[in-house]
Image (cartoon, rainbow, N blue to C red; front, side):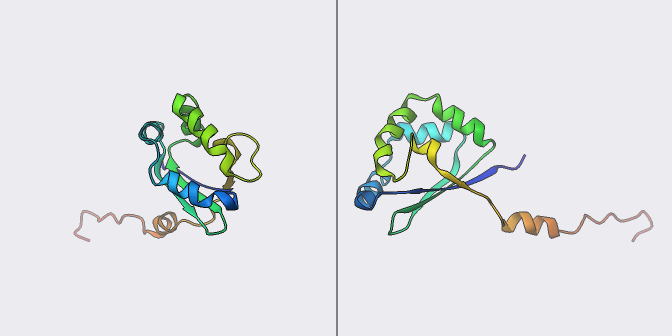
Length: 125
């Protein structure tokens, strides 16, 4: 089964960008371990100077990965700690992000172009 590729946006408050960046330079070790155990792979955050945050991760199931994180104590603490950093957020950041639709993936399109395997016949083709 191919992984779900998840991309999302949030808006960091202008006056909190520096602190948000600093806090993500050393995320709590228990949070890092929980994300990995919950199936969040290849997880990255990108931050524009105006506070636009883009997140990306891969998982076998977005619903399952979110549910496994919601079941951890550290996630509730982290989400409460991070909630004040975002504009227009009603609730926890991991529930309030805007998921983006994937419209292009290089590997998927290259795989679709790959010719079907050629089978040789027994006459020495």
